[in-house]
Image (tube, rainbow, N blue to C red; front, side):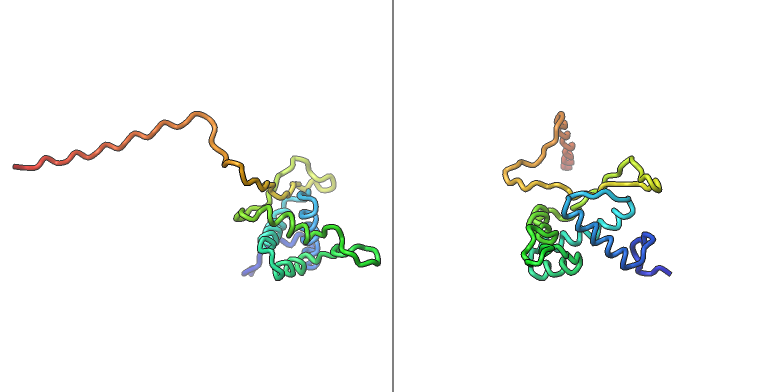
Amino acid sequence: MRHRVFGKQLSRDTEHRKAMRRNQAASLFEHGAIRTTVVKAKELRPFVEKLITMARKNTLAARRNVISVLRDRAMVDKDDTDQLAELSVVQKLFSEIAPRYATRPGGYTRIIHISDRRIGDAGKQCVLQLVEEAVVADEKPATKTGKPRAPKAPKAAKAPKAAKK
């Protein structure tokens, strides 16, 4: 029975699946878009959206949770000086990506299907990308274009019943 079991196995064991999901999420945050198979993108999407929602809180607890989930090893440079790197994945998530979606109630990613198939096994491919939402305060909301709709005809008023004498 599959009670309360969700997600695909992707022909990998649990540790490999988790590591792959973390690596793909880090690449998505780093580059803004990744090219992968449709099934992997559909599995990655809720994971990434939960991380962005967590990062929108911008608290120390949220930052620690994201670090524990992503296991960002690029927090310090590779040399022996132990200096902070320019911008790690977690830092970029909290400073650039999360503020971009501060007012958006969800749906931070989109999946765009590609007609090209993968060469080795002809797997369906897609691009998983972050939805670009520029922070512009003075911009007016989009209005409809085209001819305006005709005004609705008023409902016929009910005639009052004649009073009997």
